[in-house]
Amino acid sequence: MSKEHERGMSVIVKTVTRLTVGLIFLYGIYIILHGHLTPGGGFAGGVIIALSFINLDLAFGGSVSAKIFSKGSTGVVEALGAVMFLTLALIGLRYGGFFDNFLHPDGDPGQLLSAGIIPLENIAISLKVGAGLFGIFLTIIVLQKFESEKK
Amino acid sequence: MIELYVLLGLMIAGAIISIEVKNLLSAVVAVGIVGLGLSIIFLLLKAPDVALTQIVVEIVAVILLIRATLHREIAQKSCGSRPFGAIMGILFLGFAVIAALVTFSSGLNPFGEPLMTVSRFYPMNAISGTGAINVVSSVILDYRAYDTLGEATVLFTAVIGVLTVMRSVGKKKEEDLQENNE
Image (cartoon, rainbow over all chains, first blue to last red):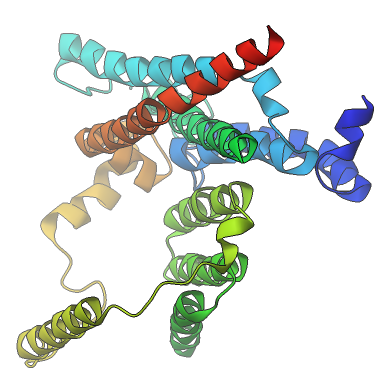
């Protein structure tokens, strides 16, 4: 425990991060789920979620977030997002064509549950982008640690 | 439109500073000015989707990634002058300027004119066709979902490449740790 206090930035930064990191995560989820209603979407929202994890690493030092979301699981989640996106595209083949919006009749425009498969595609892309960027970040952190230990 | 030119001047200044400054962290901050200016320009041109993506990706991909992985040792690294690169850069810029002068000598169309058939179709039919209020979202995920698939594939390939190239290093580190424990 004492080791954790020594690493990372000052107490002020740590406290502020502890308070705000959940809000950043929630904002990312909001951006993803409202991608078909407001500016934003899967790409920006996924990056914001990755940002909330990276924020933890920066404030507390080392790879704190790797305990929550390990490097192996980033690969799994990223692949899940890619498979989900392609599956949605392939289900469309049954209804008329690749990327056919087969859920379209459900929901009125402007409601959260509308626009057919567009929100689902946003979720798939956010999983892909967020997990992918966070995986790259974790990989580079591990590389840097290895090089500094070698010296 | 004057604010656009002010922002463009700020971005050019930031780009030049980021090249000339010796400290790597200062260079990253200067590059951040370019990204922030670009994001505000997107906002002024009424493209909030692109502005949001631009600022978020800029923060993560450029500033945080470099800031988090910054070595103090390489912060003061400087390289000698490369005359070949400078000559080629000047030649390329010269050709680009000449080509632009030849192409645009008859005058440019106003911004957003003429409106193409395709770009008129999307705003007219997006809401009734897809049910999404955000027209940009309906274009990238419905009408042009193929493009998004290609973009996702590019990112997937990049992530796979990074994980593969750096995998051996990570494995070595685990082996070293095991040896130390033994």
